[in-house]
Amino acid sequence: MQKILIVEDDKWISQSLKLYLENSDFEVFLHYTWWDAIEEVNKVEPDLLILDINLPGKDGITIAKEIRIDSDLPIVMLTARSSELDRITWLEIWADDYIAKPFSPRELLARINTILRRSKNEQKDDGILTFNNIKIDVSKKIAYLDNKEISLTSNEFDILKKIIEEDGKIVKRETLMTEVIWYDQYIYDRTIDTHIKNLRKKVEDKDIILTVRWEWYRLNK
Image: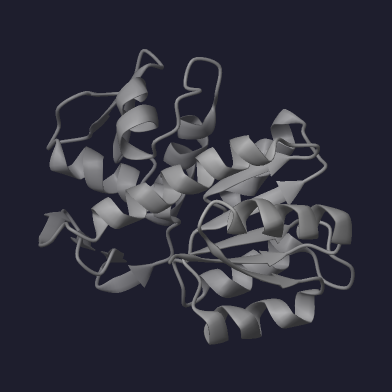
């Protein structure tokens, strides 16, 4: 049984969500305060973390960054903020996905299953990919720049892996959204743009991934 850790200070939301996920065959661990979060991640070793952005004392952004120092645990952020700027920010601060309150538990469950399914498929991959000074260890899901580990989110890793695998061939935005990060709202969504921008920054090369007519991407070879 897969394990989900919820850190949410709204007891009505957290208890309702816990019950819904347990009825969907997950083992659920629930905490209301930020100081339990990092300790519980290490103790419980969950398959996915649901993290509220507006926790008292320390916000979810800070917690997500601290977890990302040594873990690629999938993180879904819960937030009451819904502007486009905020949506981009969640992706830039290491979250794999976000969902704005109020939300449908059914929609959240669908996103959770998508992330976990993708993570399971990735565990079947093996081998090493290289391009210039970048190396990707597929089995360990770690990327290196000049032999130093790069801190990438799960989505960023998958996108970089796909583009390097294609070896200069054009990759459609739709392909990245629906087949790589398993997110089908690609028509009006700028998620991929944000991930590409983050990747260029993290690999310290703004020209490594070329954008073609705003709908396709390819490795700059």
